[in-house]
Length: 591
Ligand SMILES: Nc1ncnc2c1ncn2[C@@H]1O[C@H](COP(=O)(O)OP(=O)(O)OP(=O)(O)O)[C@@H](O)[C@H]1O
Ligand SMILES: [Mg+2]
Image (tube, rainbow, N blue to C red):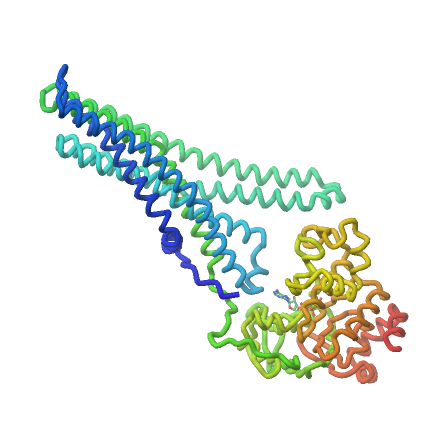
């Protein structure tokens, strides 16, 4: 996969990026819309010309020319308007999708640290919103604001030619109107943002509550849930009312401005007519232009508000999504060959949060082909060890090498292909079982998928499902039992067939008999591969070549089961404690 190209992270450059990308549609659309607006403004002007060319009861060539001009403008106005509309219909979905694709590609490169500190749902929502806001902003500027600005400017210029006094009055009104509308919208922004935030919060509360409906039922707390929702709704209502009060203020100021325009220009024009300073055609010009302006500028305050909201959305989205990737391939990263799969951790230091180190000066060498078990208390750092090996997080000190190459000198994609991981809590795509297994190797045939499932002892239960390999597994795989999900994850990793295999509590949900059967498979299939197995159930790892005992981020013991059991240490204590509970397993593991 080529790395996603960097996207501009500021709103304006981001918009320009997508305008440029779709210039072939955007430029003609902007042109049509501009010409459409100009035709609309020139209409009244042509009408005045028509009246001037046709004193009552005459029929001259000038009248015909003027009439033709007026008709052409009227037709062109409609045609160009529709053309701009049609182009927008073509451009909008394409543009939204291309922004969505680009944002998603960027999101894919974010590290585990980023992903674990942001809600998946919120990120998906942001990607959609941000892509949509590109369309909304462009359409608000081009179809709402640009025509108003154009109409006011050109009308003022036309009137200045006819009558400088009227033109100057309209010019002043326009500047004042635009400024006040902009200022009101800007100052009400905090209210609309607050209203939007409370709406989002209500949705959050609702989603959380709906996804835990069954908990509410089991604890008989439905009325409590309704009360929680009620509080969120009350907050939302307060914010919406405050925002509405402001909107009402905007409407009033606009109504006053329009009344001033209507009465002022009309009165002034009539006065000029009355005193014979202008003729009737110019009165008609003033009145029709006035109506055109009122029509265009209607709801300008609200449109400004919407524009600010869209820009706010875009800004938020870009700030959340387009932060730089914190783990990137080195410029000279390579696809190093991994013939043996030897791993070494040299003086490794790491902390999830600064000042709270999980590892300090951790050293361990694992030979290629060795099968190693990691054991130790919960929270002692076993999964972290694997996260670092996969470069899910970058270490702060030391180096991790695979077959002598620092993992930071690998291309990340290539590194991830070298390590097959069966995670502690495998979560599956809401796709068919077959597709989930095939994820290990997308081009695998049905027969290969089935063979992998058989080796992972998953084929049996899959065959029992009515839809077999085509059965959907539910969100994150919830329709499967924990052990079934684990077997699908094992099948997927087997199909991937990477030189290093990691099992993080991969068989913890299986009954002892199935677990043993899968271990047999792994013992046969994993010959020559480096295997790391994390397990709390010591019988799962006792037969491996070597065990590393973790305690609070340190490897406190290192050796085979036989060696460690002979030492007075943590492993012996753990083994003794478990021996009672898993005696049967232990005996089985040792024979
Ligand atoms: N994403 C994270 N952010 C912050 N701290 C974390 C994160 N993941 C793990 N930790 C902390 O790092 C320490 C080591 O956790 P780790 O998951 O490696 O333990 P583990 O040995 O795998 O435990 P378990 O046996 O319960 O799976 C713990 O103190 C844990 O709270
Ligand atoms: Mg763990």
